[in-house]
Length: 106
Length: 117
Image 1 (spheres, each protein chain N blue to C red):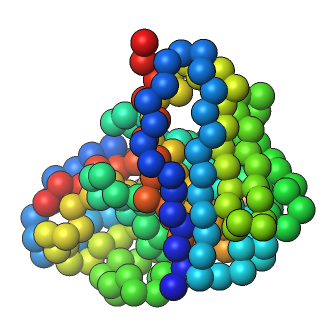
Image 2 (tube, rainbow over the protein chains, first blue to last red):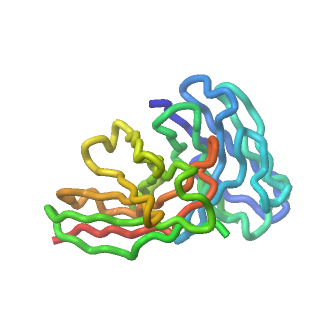
């Protein structure tokens, strides 16, 4: 299985801050990297697919970058509603493994 | 509107069997894979397996192979996840999700399974 490692596991930031979450794959996954947001008691929601493509309806303050094994999710100006857990997922090969998650507190 | 609606919360005793469901609507159910994801209490997301409802072709994560069975009935646009003999460690939230290209773009609301004596 491809291992996905996120950092940090948790972070606390303020409204208006710029935040970056990183995700590292144990092998080259090309551009097959997605990001999901999960709020407490809710199902995950697709934010970004194929490294940097924004899912319809997702605010433009979210962006993604990277290739190969190293990827980042950036929130340019934190809003209170961004408080959630964030997961990366590789879609290069089955099983489509997730990172362990990053809990973001505002 | 695309929707995946999952069956309600379940409480079972160890050793019992269980089948939970995920009904798709608002799209062509036989055109997309459906996957299942486990989330144990307070933990992250674990990808379990995937099925194509058109022909029921199924692939499992090695971690879940032999532990669960994924199936689908295209006549009622429903995918299923089942256990033949539950263990306490199966207690978790289970999500289904539609696979669209390389993404899980629509998710069910989740089914909470509690296994306790």
